Amino acid sequence: MPELPALPGGEDASKVKRMEAFRIYYNHTIHPELMRMERQRLRLLRLFLFSGIILTGIALAGFYLNITALTLFLALPVGVYIFYLLYRIQEFRQAFKPNITNLILDFIDDGMNFDPNHPLQYEPKRSIEKPIFLKSEIFGTDAPYYEGEDYISGRIGEMDFEMSELAVKEFSPVRNRLNDVFSGAFLHATFPEETYGRVIIWPRRFRQHLTRAIKNFTWEGGSNVDHEVNNEAFREAFLTYATEETHVEGILSMPMQDAIVQYRIQTGKEIYMSFINREIYAAVTEDKDLLEPYLFRSNLSFELVKEFFEDINLLLRIAEDFDQTH
Image 1 (tube, rainbow, N blue to C red):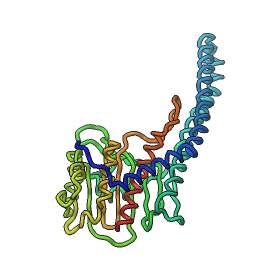
Image 2 (image 1 turned 90 degrees about the vertical axis):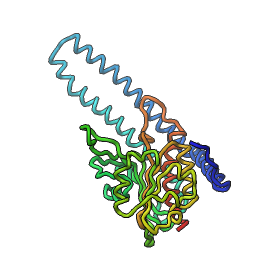
Image 3 (image 1 turned 60 degrees about the vertical axis):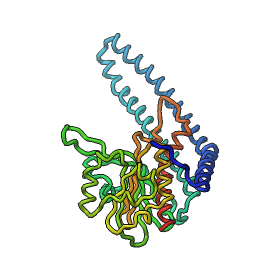
Image 4 (image 1 turned 60 degrees about the horizontal axis):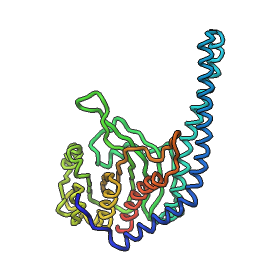
């Protein structure tokens, strides 16, 4: 991939300043919470290892003594105790991500053009509804397997938005298994005024996997409009399709194109977007489940938190840019 120019000086400096502010916030606010959760993890690990030794001793004693009545007598309390250990582990996992996510959202909420009357809301077990995902027209699938979590909602300027992590799969046409369609963060925002026109951008390197989605959009009047995109780096990375009489760069601004290209280079993640009249959709791929805690190794990692912050922040910046430029 060719070397690309940096973002304009002011915009690039603003991004660096923002990340420096997040690092300070991490040191003062997120890191202490991670330390508290780390102490909880170590206590849980010690309990887990100690319990393993005790349970192994009980199992060996029952094996060597070969007393059936004793074995049956111990089976119930041992089973209950194992269930208790698994419950404690699950409790730790379920508490970790919401605690850190809420702190990240507090930082984002203070630094963007959010409506103070509509603060960011986080619901760990909720996700964007399937019909909304399908309306984006980005992925040509009926999504027979659809799961999600980590739902975030709020308002940027005059735009209501929602986002969540999604895992979408479909049945393979040649094998008896499910194929991945999309895994990552998905955003949906609604522009407050009536706008007309439809634009979809797809990663160019995934073109062979997007045949159905492209055909569907073409059937509805869409056509390739790469020639209307002036950003050469963006043209090299993405396919751009739009319906007739849609002003592409009026919807997909140059600053937004620059930000998307730079983010793709820096992270290696792919971005999909569609603008369907007043509805905006954006998807960022993510192979792993971010901020899921480890049990047998430390979770004190700025890079892990930073990656999760950047995924959320990119999608919200896209919505903010669209709100400010339209």
